[in-house]
Amino acid sequence: MDAIYDTHLESVPLLCKGKVRDIYDLDDRHLLMIASDRLSAFDVVFPTPIPDKGRVLSALSKFWFANSATIMPNHIIAVAVDEKVPELRHHPQLAIRSMVVQKAQPLPVEAIVRGYIYGSAWNEYLKHGKLCGITLPSKLKLCERLPEAVFTPTTKAEIGAHDELITFEQMVDMLGVEIACEVRDKALALYKFCSDYAYARGIIVADTKFEFATDADGNLLLIDEMLTPDSSRFWDLQSYQPGSEPLSFDKQYIRNYLIQVGWDTATPPPELPTDVIAKTTEKYQRIESLLV
Image 1 (cartoon, rainbow, N blue to C red):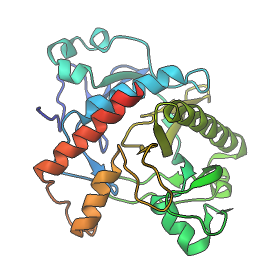
Image 2 (image 1 turned 30 degrees about the vertical axis):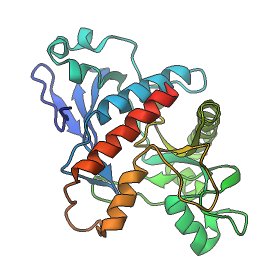
Image 3 (image 1 turned 90 degrees about the horizontal axis):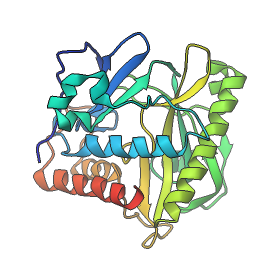
Image 4 (image 1 turned 180 degrees about the vertical axis):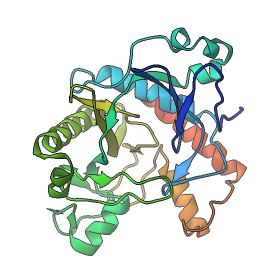
């Protein structure tokens, strides 16, 4: 399977390249967003792509955006991408990775909701017994379910820099109380909706990241991606045991591999071996098949 690391369209101008997505400027109201197969881990873009990854990200995002629109409006424009960009008719692999979206102003925070304790949240809990200023129960085990989902915002770092946990009060200082409260409440509602859906299909959504923006009228929109294996941790419910490393269907597999080989995140990222690439593609495809 061929991987798509970069995209090159001639009929529309490239606006910017993110860690994974290439963004094209369609007109004064719309953008074209194409999910590539680039891999980002620990806020670093790797030289090795993951085949089919971008297609899975787009398919899952479109699915979740469509099914959660009654909870929170999003930036998706209901139009066939090849109508907006006829050039894509000649590039079907790009077309299925593409979304036409509304232009909006992204908020400078990432809205993370955690239902289980793992990853950077686990490390923070071990140090302080708190997470983003929220006191958590004592003696939690790795991967344990929290009494209730918690909202743990972070900064939104540039490529190569690292996101940092912030308190809700710091988020209020950045956004104002009205928008901060709306982001928190909508993120928690979206997490509950999506995690309940996944749980019924044998999948635990341990945590997930949402991104929000404001439109020209100041209305809040959900943007970027939604409940993908890049932005979420998906665990197998049947084998789940608190205190044990979970069987996952997400990017954590890559993170664990990089920790195992001793990559320090400061030096240039290594090329990934063939078996790790294939296993990652398999995990991404598997979670799509379980959820969509």
